[in-house]
Length: 211
Image (tube, rainbow, N blue to C red):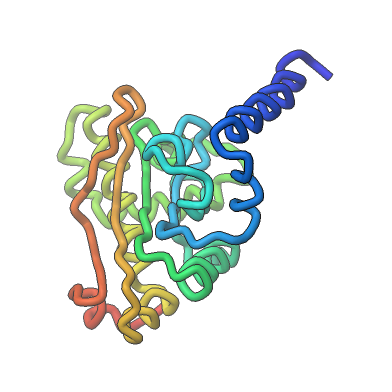
């Protein structure tokens, strides 16, 4: 085993010791169940750790991550996480969080073949197609890239709100809110895109075709 791998195990021991020093029953309490108020759908990028950037403790955030924080109607992994979070854990907030500099979004801006991921990137390319006029009008490449990241988050929030899982929760008057965020890697700050929907939002009645 190399030095880095061994260090991971040592870090775990130190982390356990630090928690037990504050509360001897910390892990016993944590093992008794979870009731997180938040479901986080984020990018798999290693620089965007959900709990850490919002200062949340273990047990406070239920997390699903994939490349470019996508909500794809055929992704049974994502739908299973969503169903469990909404119907079993009764989360009150779902946050779709993208980040500037996202590699998946960047790949969707070009035509290079990367491999298997091309099939996933195709869904992101659809977002560009939806907003082509607005994006093509932006001459600065970085600015266009950043706006594409934001549009991608917004579209995923819309798609999330259209799922039968979320729509069903709203019909039952379950307290559930959906939000769209973007994380700035170079600053560590989250930007709320103000695309927020809840029980009384227009999406509850506008989108009748569920996925």
